Image (cartoon, rainbow, N blue to C red; front, side, top):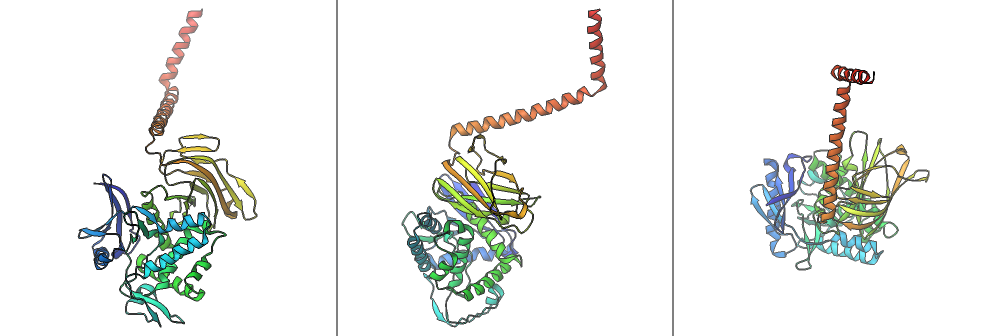
Length: 433
């Protein structure tokens, strides 16, 4: 059994520090969550207890304990609810998109007893979610999975039913139903705002669930408190989004090709700010994205990862727009493509990259990216693999040549070389006399 993916979340408090990894044996894959500390074992075992409690309802991805500190989940094949929603947006199907929101509402209510009335925080609630008070009656339930992101719900290919693939964060406390919805909607909007543009806004989605402005303020405070509880007082909301993005997207790289995405990274002069990565799903062959930028610190370099797999891209074009609405096409950049011609690129690397200098400092407000996907996923293309190997060999030869040239330059500067050269000259002159 081979480990093909691993992510470690050491930034959390000790009782929540886990490794998430994927193993493959032939065609079979499984996702494993492993406690990294003795304090985290209870956290891991809690996931299995939750599954056993609801096993017969058949709405959870099956799991089993494979050791005292490891729980293994089946690697379900199917399309996520998130991708179904993005497809509806790509087709400008607002009604279809809203129908998926209704499906989501039904999913989060299944197998919990929903109560409507004045919300009373139980013992332990404030430690995790802070002190909250609602003006009106609100729906709540005990035992809610608060990390019910749209990515975490898969339509299982085997029976067509929706299943929840991640149930790490379940609490035996009364929690508002709308808080779970708020977190899922906000995470979706944070990553896919460009796909929603001119179709449906964040406020409109909240309106579908009757989430008021005053409630979003309360839920925002709850979210920050929850993340301070998990991350030990780090920047709450940002820590949540950073960790969520990394875990969901990296796992999706191993799912079918429909799970393609584009990322933009910012470099502060010393390193790329991984937590500030801007991620957008890619749907269809013709990609056209306008990505807003917001600089809170110096950015010396910008990196665009056009896809998350090896690929052949046609007519790739990157433009930047300044705050004065001046538009510039980026024509000089570093890249890791093995072949380029005009605006066509062949990337054999599973992490295609374009890097360019930020000459506009903090005046940038947007990046426009356009390209057509000719082919995605080249690992099985023998010709391109061979070309990649040839290029690597040529790079090695070039490095060796530079090394030899350097050694020759050194030799030329030595006294021995100069003496031998003088003797050779004297000999030639003597023969000509």
